[in-house]
Length: 229
Image (cartoon, rainbow, N blue to C red; front, side, top):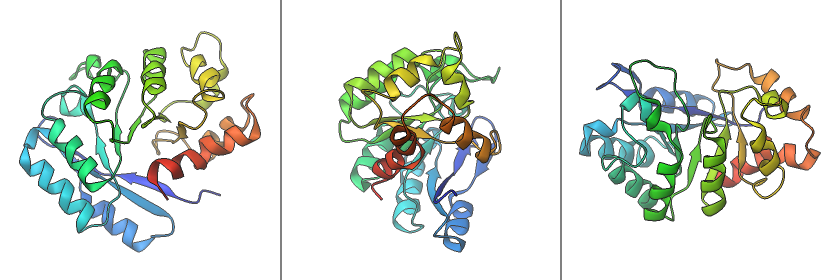
């Protein structure tokens, strides 16, 4: 029952030595354009090479956004090396997915995922469309406050069990309170597959004590707005 899935490129060569190339993502999208869309992955540590790779991925490969794994690049969300890429996203009119929240790598710092840094970025780039994913744990309320301030910030319910939104003291509870009220048009459900089985994620969202129309926005309507489909 999934209409469209986003596949994300990933470039962490200078820090962790790995890469999912933009060409590989584009190849899958070309083979199944009705099922997939793709985001480019570039390494901000590569300077202008990363900027050129992003432009090529969007203009020539047909990818529709940018994926930044800040903790794997060992860069803060508001690091100056990120700014040329944010500017290029605004120029190309494509959104960016930014890793926000704790990471569990002992070779990087959890501070790279603090949501407050997104506030500074969005003040400098008010036209930039951002999805913050995962949803900021253990700084969930900090992320919610940034999203409340900036209408171009969406929150990705990704790489976590949706049922935890309804578990007392999980730390995720405020997401459901704000996500069914003032920020109901800003929540986007994802899976980080194969981390989370897709069917289980969808069912856990539908089992939450939220209105049916809110669940539908979380499961697709908000993503369509974010992607401008």
